[in-house]
Length: 258
Image (cartoon, rainbow, N blue to C red; front, side, top):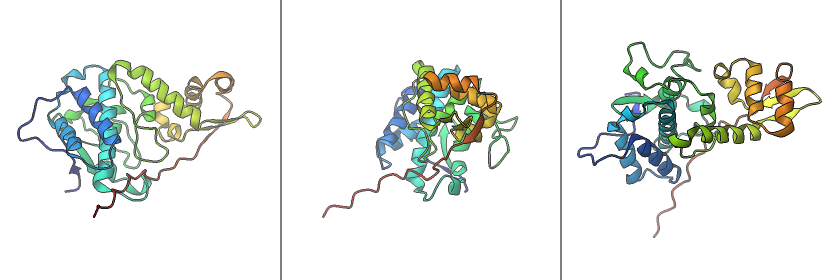
């Protein structure tokens, strides 16, 4: 079997917390551990029968699925212990899966199917969900490009993992986008160039034209940099900055005590 489901139905499931609380707790638990503890597995197994009916608006859906994606990514790193980088392990994003509310979803299904509304993506170019796929009902209503500064694919240059809360999601996404873009944007006014985060090039379809991507960046900078970039969005030369795709590997377990 190519894909591997990393959670399982509980024989005697205990009363589960809300889907939102469960996903947030799982993501937080995995962030804090370098091992697949019984508590982590219990939380992951709870997703199998999670009630997704409360995800009735984009705020709850985004918060839930971003937390689930980040949890599954960390779970996959611990379960498979891949070496190298994201680029040399692309099949991991197809293989690692969770059962969520009765649906099997891989990392690619969550990112490109649910959060990017069934968008095509490298290297497969096909849409994640067919017309008859029941998982289409899980998709967000509107693609929010700020998700790219919330999702962590395990690489060194990825945005940090955090707990995403439906009630303050918009403010959290704005804060995360500002922090990331301010760290990865460089202006050269003399040469009329701007170095943008490579994420804006990888997901160009989500940001519009190149000038739109520059304006998006300008809106999340501050002070003179924001004003200058906004004013020159149509004529500045935009370049993609470097991106370190190497996996942030979990720490090795301590040696056994004698």
